[in-house]
Length: 203
Image (cartoon, helix red, strand yellow):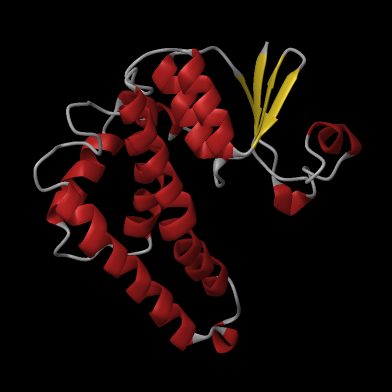
């Protein structure tokens, strides 16, 4: 029995995408942290931090979306997890870049935007927006100049999945620079995949 805890408006979405890409059977338990559903004794016994997502496979419990996705993809060989050590290293490079470099300013913009309008620090938001645009224009856009996916010689991998889930939010927040046309095309290729489309359906 495989269960994934976490609602779709969180990093759990990346795990759901991986599960669908791999064609694995699972039960989705959509906990809403805003309603205190991640602070119950039962859930805290699985994940003492009270955060999502959490994967449970029989008696095996794993937290942190990046660890969950690496585990699922590496345990179920396929296109998401390449076989060559250097390709695996590149997957880890791009996944790390997405969560340590690009994601923090995107999350900061989102959190600042949830404040009352008169409490939003517009200068800080502008700085974060500039950081996001700079990374996309100087790193991702040039990288996609000669290839359709992130890894040379590879099709859609876990690197593309992890980054596309984040860049999809960048686009939704109207932060994707107009000149990033290659990034836009790559994003559309990723988000047109049947597995992504399936997890967009209402539960």
